[in-house]
Image 1 (cartoon, helix red, strand yellow):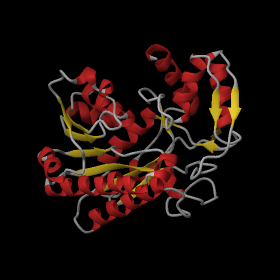
Image 2: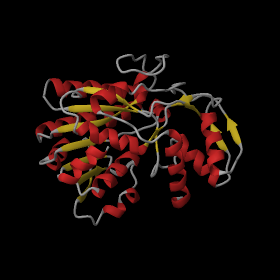
Image 3: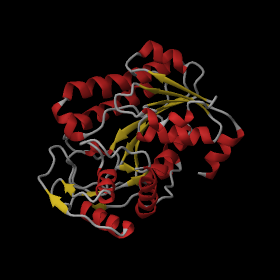
Image 4: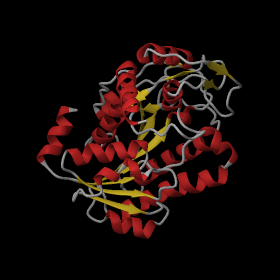
Length: 325
């Protein structure tokens, strides 16, 4: 990561970040502005929270544009002169996608194609876009390896897999460099704990802090490769400067570990020195039972070298929520 920081300190690039008011997008905005980069942030605020980027509104290097990414022509206008696009805008949540398949196709597929097309028209150097570990579907083998995927289990997973097809297509046919990042259960500061579709770590931390019961879908033995936000920031920036080797490909972005929800809860109780009650329910439709990534290809092609373990990230995340909730 030192080489990336050195590169940013030596030259001012122009970045455009979609979904800039969301969890991952707002952390990318914060990091780039802290290194004197120029950032245009795009968000329609349907999922993102303006308070995530409010502190940057007076920064002369930052421009916020409230816009839906499906507005291709206006998006292309905003991309003129942009070096790198970090495309984070999407509707997440597997269970929500199960009841809204058409909407997910409109937002996650058409939206991503719109981003690629706007970038092509504006001659952007590269688009780095968010994919998902959900593309592995029912493939049972661990660790998950790029090129060995199973049957998709949700409209959300389907939308992300189609995004990867378009990424490869735009790179191969239109010569627009693209890199897809298959995120594995990202967690960290600024992740919204308040929705019924929120990720488990912020929801569990909030429940413990407020002495409320933790609700677990399933028996808690399902496992995840929880990935701290700063590792994801590293992956995005290293993808920008990865050269041609990664063009048109998608990579696992994780730490390479495996933690069950029951182990997560125990770690939270120990780290926070506090307990609350835990209840278990039925499995959620469309959920993958176990998730663990091989990050060998990302290490080789992107020089991705995640610095923050699950426990490191968990301690930093807990501290942030104690200070901010």
